[in-house]
Image 1 (cartoon, rainbow, N blue to C red):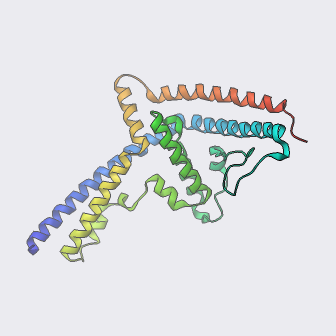
Image 2: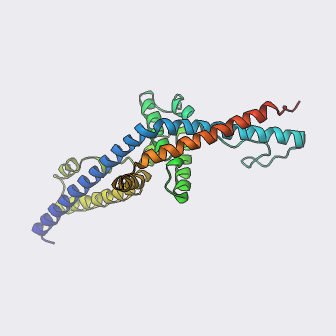
Image 3: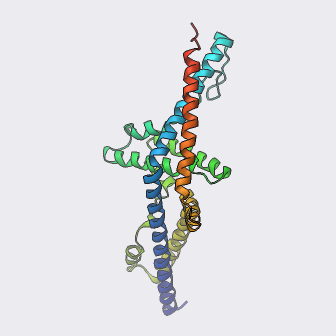
Length: 260
């Protein structure tokens, strides 16, 4: 390939990169704006529902433990390390408590607020009650488990990866300018590689649950419906059901003696 052809190919690739980056930035802006709207309108309900669900999970575990104590006493069996044990409560992820706890000790002090803020953003983004269908709920549950694990470990990089943060979000002009001293052949290869990364990042953002929910909200708006208001109403009913379940479990525990 002649130098002139190389230069032409490089200029074309740079223009494609600029356009792809602009499209990605627009998409990210729309996602962030929509997530802010969801947070403003549903955030308190999401927090309350998570809190009540955590209480229900803990109370169910305690009811089961007391029943096992009454039935089996000291003869409850155990398995090898890492396997379930009869009467052992399942892990409970308390969204509200974890969001307010001090960040893990291995997180630098300057990063602690952003670590908690990042966790809170992800917890609301992947909340199962924002699911569009059962497959979406299962996917959100798996994603939320990964978020909880990363936060508990103080792994900020893992949280950022789950949030979809990457160098491909940075301005392309600065990247292109940094290649001016490179040979045209090397610069072309680097620009093409960066272009693939930006396009991959765009595909990842489009696969985010917030994007699918945003599309549904827009479609409902065209039909004269407020989808977020509908979700809020469903969540309020769910909170009422979970609260009644929590109170029922508390009543059971109040009338269930503990093992001597």
